Image 1: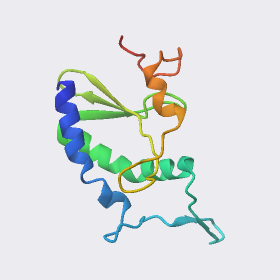
Image 2: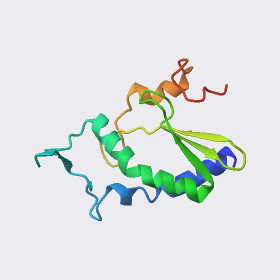
Image 3: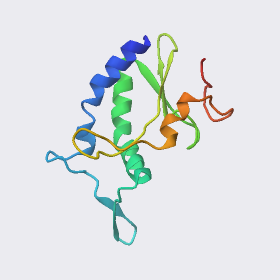
Length: 136
């Protein structure tokens, strides 16, 4: 599988992601957390929380994408490693990195910026912070 093939397939598959996180009315399907004493904690808009919730909800969709595309999925061995997910093509062994980032909409046309973590891939990877290293 070539990089452009992967991108086209992934972009087509992301059209189904909304059903994993939204109700038919467009609201979040997750409203909060419940502890063992049945106390309910609502989800804040903190991107660290929303990004983790999105990762948990979307993971089965990424697994489905991998199976449908002949790709094996590998998870990052550590929280601070890049990438979050690696897809490995069964036939060629070619690897495709996915790093999940979140932001929020300011209005219908604009999103807020992303944290610096979203841009670190533009810089050399710190030794030991990537499962496979980076091709140059």
